[in-house]
Image 1 (cartoon, rainbow, N blue to C red):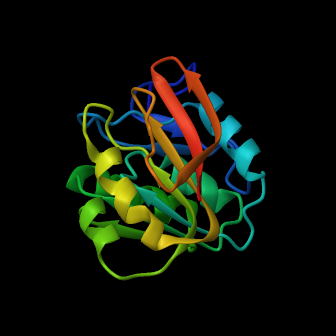
Image 2 (image 1 turned 30 degrees about the horizontal axis):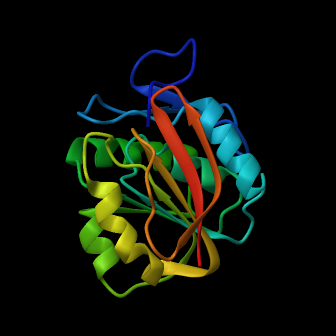
Image 3 (image 1 turned 90 degrees about the vertical axis):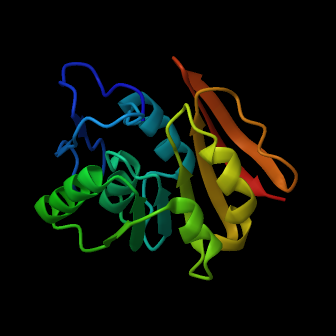
Length: 186
């Protein structure tokens, strides 16, 4: 979540592809909230394939919703977005309503607790917590149990992350202060 693309003020980000292309998402100021840049999202969705038709996605630490709403716009069958900040969650609700995103399910709560529960498996899981937290490291051991066979995990962090045993880095990159990786389970 680093500063949004050129030409837009703080608190908004643009969907870059799919049925909601060019639509603007609005979100409140919140500590650690920094939407994934247009450039990084473009790279990520090139890696994933532009069309996510029929895929299920989980956006942990949803924040601005840039990753989850982008996936929904690109045809994901179901996108679950988890957010713990109440103000940010309300903005996600408003954006989902404005986009008429019927394939998006919003959950107010803690991402670590959500992963620890038994629940559905996902084809793509987005992990993009505040950079100054240890949350990426805390959720990685829990993710394998919620990942569909042949699923992928996207991780964005403020430093290069070692994903740990059981994971292979399939693709990786860096843009400014953001390090991003697409992982596969071994």
